[in-house]
Image (tube, rainbow, N blue to C red; front, side, top):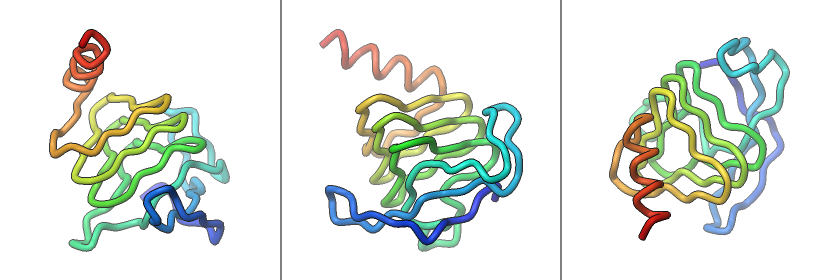
Amino acid sequence: MKYKLTEKFKINAFGVKLFQMVCTEEIKSRGVKVGDIGGWIESERLKNGDARVYGNAWVFGNAEVFGNARVFGDAQVYGNAEVFGNARVYDNAEVFGDAQEKTLKDYSTTDLLSELLRRDNG
């Protein structure tokens, strides 16, 4: 993993304790440098031992990742976005703004863009 959890934490709107991330290994594709502070995640690993955020993925700013959610590949989550439940965000996918992704669906780049466009167009 290219990050560790800081001691800084918050309780989100769902009552989940989230810890802020800090980069421990540069992620050039995302412009993230060692020591950069990231977003908020529940833990480094899921209950089954799988990493929650891995590869060149990164969580920025106020974004939150919790529950059984995973972010990996070159994906990024930022803004006030929340990724939770069993959601999977991967490849070059981006979840941002005030988005909430909580479904069982896996989101790759194409899938995520198609899904968000479908929602916006009713």
